[in-house]
Length: 369
Image (cartoon, rainbow, N blue to C red; front, side):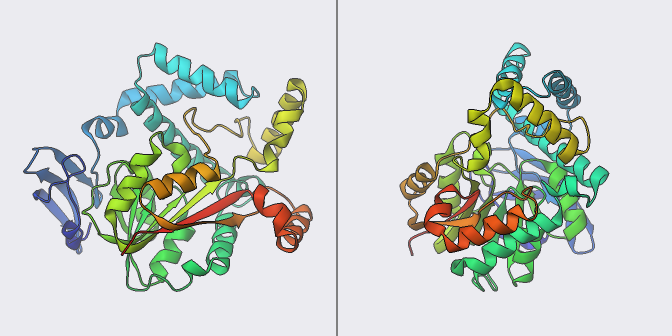
């Protein structure tokens, strides 16, 4: 953490500027470890490997708690028992188990974010660059998607040189981090899972802060732009997240939100095929795409993909204006050649047919000056 980051940090709970650095150690020019004390509400937040962890005490305790790892192992055991069941069954079983174990929803949501982090790292480490892993996490897929976004969407072209940018929910998208950093911006990367940021920082040497999007630890009007790629479907109270983004944006600042289209035709087979056929398809996909006996689609039971109209109306209600939806990608990255080329050709030549059923959308809005 660079010392100048203190200029925009506030306590995530009381939003006070009265923060005091305690027991700090330095590595080169960064604050590498220590604590941040809020003198207003007396809450203390640790700094780990140069990352200030400005989370609630409940979420801080869950990061490296043995109970968390036990819950993760239990969820994976459950997963192995329902490998090829449909997503609805998958979600119901996991939610019911969490309730029986007395695990509150906030912590259960976090546990699933940690599972997602571990699974992504496992795929990256074990599968490398082979065809299977390209489905989710390889740099090639992220590069291709982001290349299209930054090339086709005019609001993103050369827009942020010298500006302060917040990247919320970094996950594994190193390509986005590289693009924002190379544009001459001052980027702060946030994620609720500290382990994710430790790995991001080790690979990219960038500024990171562990925080909850619904309680951002930054002063009002701190950023010229906020990027929020594939995050909102992990959130239960969308209005709280958008209100926080609005608060930390400078007047005239922009927000860029990437989300999956719930009406993509990729989901059509799941609605029309009989259960037995769907189980066979899922088994084949596991073998072909995951390279293992792990379930392919194992999103958190709490994930909810919001319709475009709901996201747009929520952004407007939060105070954003000039809210626009644009296609980010017409098809998911696991569509193979030559079908990908055909789909790409048709989508650009027949946008009136293909844009409404695109795979991902980018939502863009501005804060009033």
